[in-house]
Amino acid sequence: SREPDKAVKYHCNFDLHQSPVANWRDTLYLRMAPDPPDHGELPDSCRNALFEYAEQVKNLGSTLFKLLSEALGLKPSYLTDIECNQGQIILCHYYPPCPQPELAIGTSRHSDSGFLTILLQDEIGGLQILHEDRWVDVTPTPGAFIVNIGDLLQLISNDGFRSVEHRVVAKNAAPRVSIACFFSTHFHPASTRMYGPIKELLSDENPPLYRETLVRDYIKHYYSIGLDAKTAISDFRL
Image 1 (cartoon, rainbow, N blue to C red):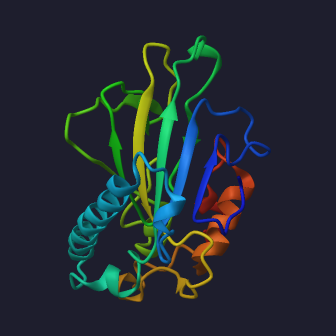
Image 2 (spheres, rainbow, N blue to C red):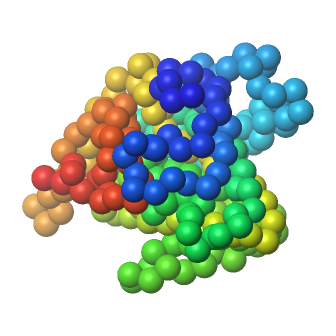
């Protein structure tokens, strides 16, 4: 399903008609906040675990937002005060073994659209980040999370933080599983706040670099250009 207002859905390629290549994966999409789904909407086999995981990773996110606020020279509660943690989207990805990985991609090149992403991956590997125009493997570390800055945090921090482009390469050795938690309200109508560069960070020497946007307007544009294309945030530069 690609219906934006559904809290629980399954899909393979959310941007099938925009991206130049299909992605080799299946995804369970869960909007856990605001307005979490009914328990009965989640699969029996993982229902309780997913609700517990969502709560724990939300707490971790709140701690990270406090640290990121302080890193910007703001009071610890600043990013939560402006509701950067209001939305929570969890994507459970399953990447089947690919018989010809050189002809496919697990997840195309992209940056994350929201404020912050907390990723848990298994031991199979395949995640790569773009660093100085080179793809660098992110070696799995047992029990560790990967934290990505998202486009919207780059926008409101006025490039104080930078979102990172990354991808997942297809593999034929074994299935790969990952769980990504995105702090973003996506298309939810409850989010009516306009987000732009934080005024406390601006000066004559550091003028605003981006125009203001609603979260759902940014996500709409992000989805319209698809993955493996130019970054959506570049279109919001002044």
